[in-house]
Length: 228
Image (cartoon, rainbow, N blue to C red; front, side, top):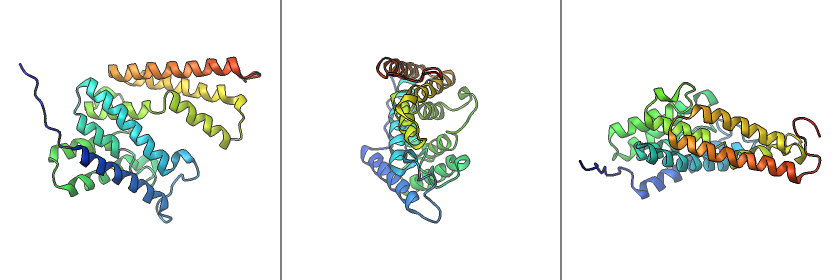
């Protein structure tokens, strides 16, 4: 029995246009003084950070989808739109708001099957789901796993180290901040279900462990377990 080869409904040019739209939408959200600009005072909640996070999630979600046999186009497009409304909507409602933006964009193109649009919007709307991932469609699960994994590992560690400056902390507290990433990594590893996501979580947790060990070796007087 041969393997069915499905033609992708999303060309490289179309995906590039979607990516540009999402970047512009985030920038406009920050610049809108009346309705947007929520959380502007933290650099990692800026349009630039949020867009970078989205691109990270697209890459991770694509990797998981390919390994798990999910519809890669649905996963990639859903990942691209999952946080498009993050800077303008309230946190508890940004997923639903993002799904509406995705639907309006995809419907306006007039070239995507209704089933494809529905799957994308369902994944975006449900990406903040906190229950067991096994209950969700495979494409939604791939997106959620990727979203969780982006804040684990080297990227997550650097984000928390950058945060130290805003909390008036010193480099002596770096081990404590890295420990937070370790704890997050353990939580993520216990939640993700696909083999590929578990593998990525394991790899990223190892990187954080190495960073913690290097800090202890190299920084004199490092605050370790609450004691200098």
